[in-house]
Image (cartoon, rainbow, N blue to C red):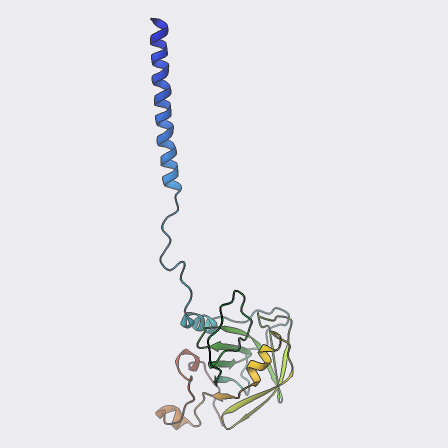
Length: 217
């Protein structure tokens, strides 16, 4: 009789222990389960987000110190329209300065250049310097070792660049900057700036025209 009672108590203890252990396992599993992720966590940034972020960022001195933040004769916003048709083919590692049609924007602002493509939201930034009729682009995150050297001409509100040397992105940066001239978004006069009565190039709107530009003579 004593043995039977002992066996019954032992069985009850084992069952009770298993039940407690089961509860503990379930509790730990529930408490460690990941919380629902915010709805925006997996969202892809829109072109507008990329555009705003590019305006807020500054270059990193990958290989060359940042130039002084002083105005240059080329400071301003420029746009071009590439008539190339079609859409970008899907790619995991798309090349820099993709050969895409549509509106492109170029900002030159006190030693900082920014390039942005409206249709895809592709953007980059880096440093630049101007000496005489030459402009150099460097500290570009897409080609940190390459320095692009160009000659420039600004006539009639149109900026033309001609490459001296630039191997960035298998010559894609050179092609992007030189294939078509860049139209200045600067109004031809103070009156035109105030009234808006001038044929502003397509693309001269939005945040990219708020960068401060030096007064013309």
